[in-house]
Image (cartoon, rainbow, N blue to C red; front, side, top):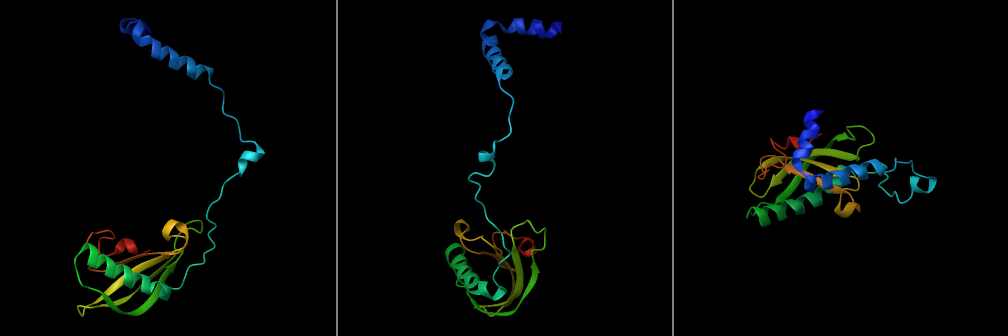
Length: 158
């Protein structure tokens, strides 16, 4: 205790002013109170997830368009998706039921260079622009050039 008081005296009166004010503010503050009935649910508008997620085939045109845009704009590549095959669902809501509903799908993709690759994607309820529509996240194996879903598009799968 002696060390505390001697160190405070050593600081001088200029330094004690802000500390005294902070201590007085802390002591005079009121205790927290529970919300009244009007404050409980007022203005709490959030998504109500119903689990209505589109089928796997509905996302194919979005994936083809976004793939062409990404390859042309960011990688200066002329690659486009020319066809899809073996599209199948791999999981639906694989985690707890209170998470955002997602449908995970996989399939084969034929590219304009003649190579067949695998695409993994998920359709997300209210995952579109500003949460107004369903969103799609996808990854073409071997063409994840910015490593967003690395390694080998594993992060795009459930």
